Length: 310
Image (cartoon, rainbow, N blue to C red):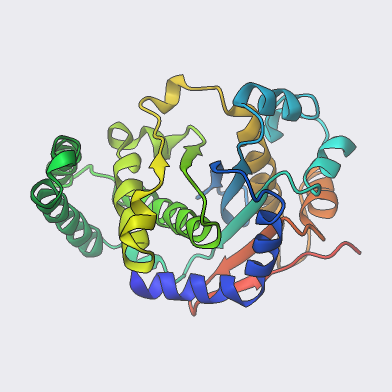
């Protein structure tokens, strides 16, 4: 994954990093952060595969965040009739920062769709978590549980019906989430607590929610390699045990749902959208937003995309 990391990190550090730093400067004393996410992948009715993340400072508790968002948008994008002006204004006031990735059909992450690459990666992670049980005896029990879950997945891959497409999708999203955790820790040196709260869908349901284990391993490896050991271990990560039963962050996650839905719907070839609410999202939420960045992951690398309102 080193080449993928370099491609994404190089592009992020060209211009988007300045916007992100300016956002972080608004919250110098905040030590608790969380990240919501939503995805639109392999939807034949949409022109784009999109992965959207929204980073929040923990300046409100989750009930308060839910009340704030729900007061402007009570339902997810597919169930609402229109996007309210108050919601559009809210997205540009600097209460969150959104990273978005458009995944082209042929892109630099395509290796993570190949059976051989995924089998090898799984083998490496099994060996890694076995080694961690020895080198980190204080967490040996936790690493043993992860290891058992990985071995269970390895056995499942031997079945003819095993879904390698979903396997690759999970790894790609966990890699992007892990990268953003690294980026936050790199740019803000007083982070004490962090949590990634994913939208509940086929990715979180797959193979007994093993995405959590992959995210833990991938984000740990990135931060251990790119940051100091003390910096990585100084952050307490909060994980959800049963994401399906946890609805406390639905309001906060609705922002990612709207942004993701707007980007997935926009046809970059002819500039069209399918409805009025998607048009509102492109013009009044996504365009000219200093707190939202978009990256196009394509065959040759990663490029920044910007939207300007006409």
